[in-house]
Length: 168
Image (cartoon, rainbow, N blue to C red; front, side, top):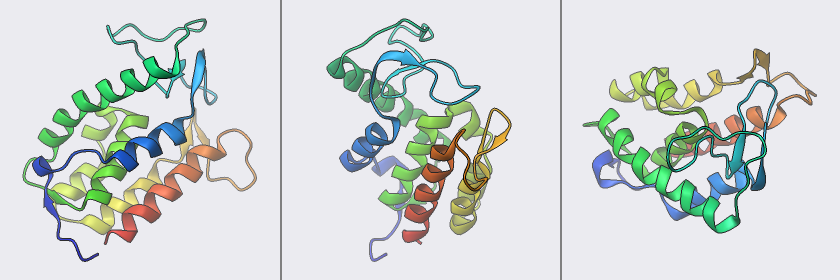
């Protein structure tokens, strides 16, 4: 990659990454449980409402509200992401991948992740490879060939890994 890494405080989620999150999550106007063992999600994968209440089965939304909720969430989440990566330099593509991962798995898993530890240590390739550790859903290994339980979880991780490695 020709572009140098920049300190994370200078980065923000790209529009392309936001569209990628929306595409990967898919839109639902009614709450659904996306994979076995997951919690109800609504709109573009939101698990909570704007006021912090958990999404419950039967809840509904509109496309515009779903986009607004996701954008508001991502903007708030980015400030915490930047704090967690204080002093770390990333390529835009890397930042987008980790924000996408964080949207799916959450801030708590991010703060405890091997990715964050490796990024803080400057081990960028190892951090990319750490993405592949997240292949389970409700205890099921989603990388199992031919699985129909959660194949999308593994496909999404492979895509993230490829994007991350492409930035190295």
